[in-house]
Length: 237
Image (cartoon, rainbow, N blue to C red; front, top):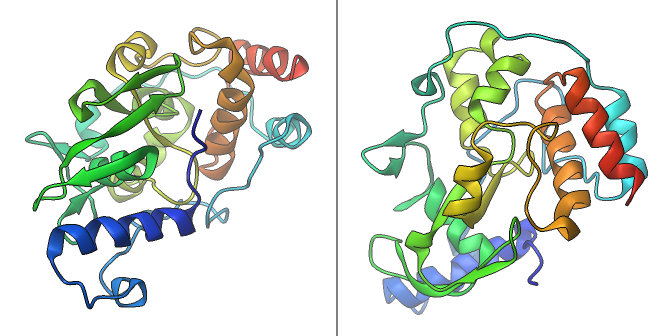
């Protein structure tokens, strides 16, 4: 099972891909720093940067302890309030010629090759949710770890549209975007961990930690059933 690449490995991988596809063999990775900007988002809280790194149960529990517990279901949710999808393309570009979706596919895949439009044409992708491996980018969905509707219920209803757009395209501040099998993403829908967990049980600990980190970074609340489910998962990690 491949590890999720670090930001440095993402930049190095993108550098290699763009060198291959652009034909600019004299362009160095340092030159690419002038055109690649993975920081397309900024959380509307004081917690910014590459995420909190809550990768162990104790750290995740500490973050969970700091989350607000609220039972809320504000009206008015509409997916268009989180701009990110337009005519099949992510609206927020992560770099010249690469959309956020394409960057996630580059980041989460192995041996990924792209065409002149930065669209992956070959590679291998491992879906963390169900343990399936794919060789066609079209078989992957880009999942929001905390679904947009769930974010709305958890506090995003008070955000500006610009803040919701940054959340929907968050590549850097939290583990929000994942390339996973289309079937697992659609099974999850907008459910929280009190209602849905990945089919692959060995991923539950990392899933819970990532969910909590996103909610912490973006100052989102949890409901009581969600909190209970997260604590139960972490108790077995």
